[in-house]
Image (cartoon, rainbow, N blue to C red):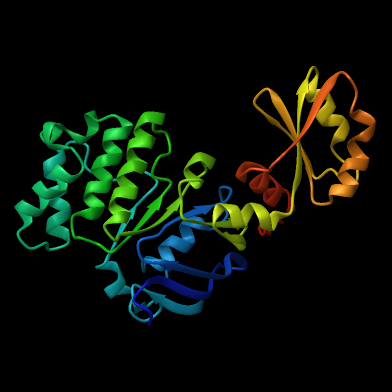
Length: 308
């Protein structure tokens, strides 16, 4: 086992009845990396995370997490990871310090009171430590949840949409904390729907309907999609998008703010398709595709795995 590898799994599969929600996923992560796990709702991201941390048993697959066998040593894995769920899961009628003390007791942390204070100081919670959790804003609840994840000094943090419903400043502050902790050697696997957050990750993995469609750095993911993209400005862009969709060579025509992004996987076919529409009414400019262009494309090409 390479000590620089935090996660190395192959063929991870989970089924519920005849419905396969995670389908033969391979994933490798280095220690100290921040990996963004992306995909639409219902794509299997949360299920995969729960399999990694031993909360769900895999139906198939093999590999290691932090050097422990993901199938046979799930209890050992749990002691070395922190898991932050989508929903706030602490006692709202307890204060910050009381919640953290409870979590420390659950993990049987040595020198518990000092560990709680260290976690409070690390996340900047000292001034609010007596405040009830139910009175906290979304950003402060997020800090409490992260502090709880760190109370037992884990080596890997699995964060499931940690910034959902949090204001932009709190999201920025949160990511600064993530990179500071990663610089100290912590490894992160983070699910997110935000493209600006995806761009902050060292590596990305895109899951759709249980299948891993692409992985790598942001630049590798964009290059691998092979998209040609045109940015269009002008009037009546919504009508233009309707006219373009369905024409051979146009894979997508999607609004991006006050502009329209028109993309295709064949540059030649795309240029043929848009040629009749390049009038004085609109300004066309070829641009480098971004992550959002790529992920919209991937969503459009993936097939729903749900069967009645």
